[in-house]
Image (cartoon, rainbow, N blue to C red; front, side, top):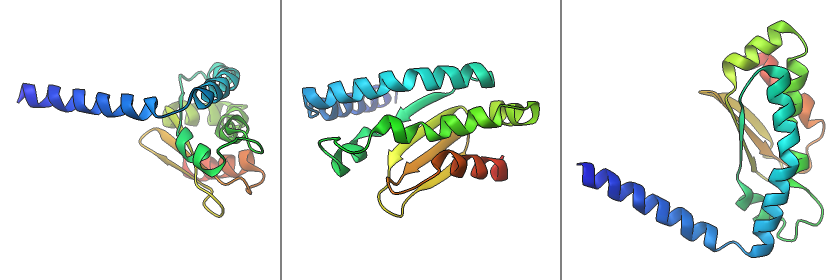
Length: 147
């Protein structure tokens, strides 16, 4: 049993390495830049809200939708949940709700008409539609009604 679990873990890790290796150097640099831009909003949200929220970005969908990254930034779209959290943390009731309910943000690209936000088991899942507007307010309204 122990060997089977170890083998499964190693196979999963090998798959992740292969997937990462298929990404070009240019794409790796873009992703690193975008994560660098996200550091300040994540840090300031955690400071204001008294949390240790982490951010996971599913870059593949963004890259597939816009391979040259010429018009839309991942950073500009994945920041909406952090903005919403900081707004909610302006008062004690909102801050307590954020601390209790949000541990991780998962951001991905959904495409036209696919904008959505869900909160389940501590993970706030934000699906981006580049045509969406007022995204921070959209996420905030969802959280106010679902926390």
